[in-house]
Length: 109
Length: 121
Image 1 (cartoon, helix red, strand yellow):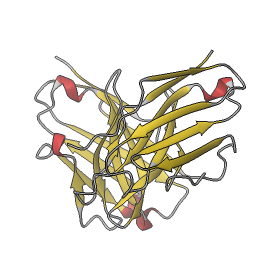
Image 2: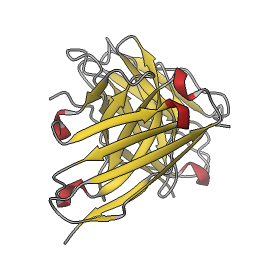
Image 3: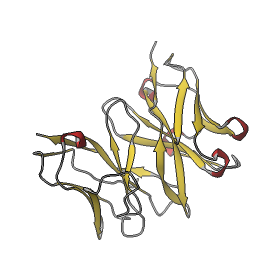
Image 4: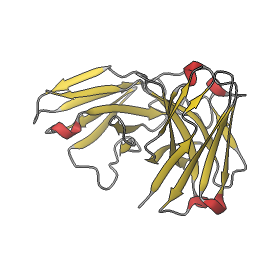
């Protein structure tokens, strides 16, 4: 089955830049999306259609795409950004497919 | 503002069944696909199912196919999940989410806080 691969953890100090990658063979053919999830809360969409940021999401959240890898970048990380981040896309060999990456725990040191 | 609130049984015995509800508000419910996603303890997010805005079609993950059904009542702004033959590894927080469809794919722009289901004797 199709998989999206994320690093289990990323750690940065406040004010630094965090980069979280997501790799998948079908990413060149299907949009990627990113969600922030804090325990006990509703997940929040932070990036859609590879690079678009929903209204209300801080400008420090951005994303890029290159081949089979997409990257979520958080510039000037703040303590409140500590959370799990999940990428999501689709297995383009199957209509209506939804695939999540395994998630990355961002720790703000 | 968009709100999604899940509710349902918290503790279910192995082999039993569950029915979860999700009450939506703050948007025109009948215009949107909806979905259910779960997170087992210590694990990542797992998509379970999506249902069209009219309720005429449902898409289900292979991992739960044959045990899960999703329905909706647009008059009551609610979507439901029913699962049978529950196993301990079905223990998870179950989220409902609003689905934005792009072609045959898409994403989830609003989520509920989730409801915890524990399968244990």
